[in-house]
Structure formats: structure tokens, C-alpha cells
Image (cartoon, rainbow, N blue to C red; front, side, top):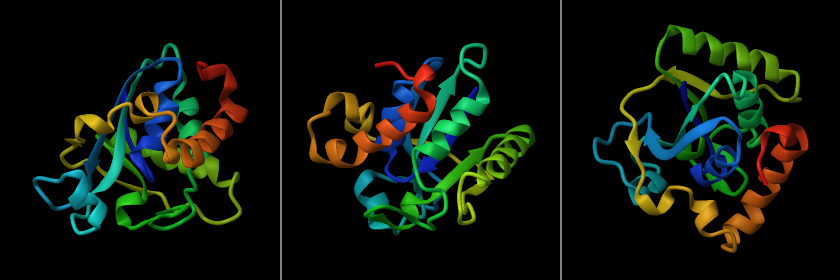
Amino acid sequence: MTFVLGGGCFWCLDAVYQKTQGVTEVVSGYTGGHDPEPNYDSVCSGITGHAEVVAVTFDETVVPVEVIFGIFFASHDPTTLNRQGYDVGTQYRSSMFYQDAEQKELFERAIERHQEDWANPIVTEVVRLPRFYVAEEYHQNFYAKHPEQGYCQVIINPKLAKARKYYAEWLMA
């Protein structure tokens, strides 16, 4: 099964899901906008309407769907509109892009279940997946390639620590 999820900068979700047992592939990309040829610079400018997302493919016989959702909600703040920490703009929105009616229902139920974990309302958008654009190669598996980079140290490491706090049994070292 594949979920397309946005939770701020795609490097963060990529880092956590790359370490999740049962996840067979994580692809960073862009979706949800109007530009037919998005790239990192144009998406970061905020003018394309696209969100930074990851396509997470996983084996449900190894990792339950609820763990995938739990990691998603633990790895970003789904209550801040168009913002994750210092990253501000619609490209950083909390989003779930469904591929069919069954996935839409799964996403909506997940939001309802996880609302109790947050004092403020979850603002995660649930919308049909339009075309998914694969991000440039240097964005794929960014954390594993650049763990010493400042953004990885200051932003991603705390998110990994938080995910590990709640989902340690599912995360590889």
C-alpha cells in the first residue's frame, strides 16, 4: 500500500519512514499544485501550489496502517496551518492525498483518532491525489546521505527522537 503524505519539509518524513520496519520505499516529491513542471526552487517559492510530500510504500503484513499514521502525526504538528517550525508556506502544509474512496476514509478516521493527542484542532487537509512529481535525486533519502548537515541535526534529529519515543519497536537503528 502507498500513502502520499505531507508534513512540512519532505526530508523529515523521509528520514523517519526510511527507518520504519515494513516500509519498502519512500519517495520525496511534490503534489497538490497547479505547476505542471515543479522543481524544488519553484515549490519553495510558494507559487506552485504544490506541497512537499513523501510517497510511503509499506507492507501491511509487517507494519500496521495505524503505525504509519501514528508516525505521521508524531513527526510533525498537524495543528499549524501552512507551517512546520521555521518552514512557512503552503508547500509545508499538513496533507494526506488519497488515491481512492477507501483511502480517503482511512485518512479521515486517522485524523479523528489522533485529534485526542492534540489540544488544537488538526488542520491536515485530505484531498484527492493529483499527479505526483518525484523530487530531484538529491532530495531522496536526504537524511541518510547528510546526517551531519545542520538542518538534519537541528530539525530532523528531534523528530526522529519523538517518533522513536512512541514507535521504537517499529524503528530501526
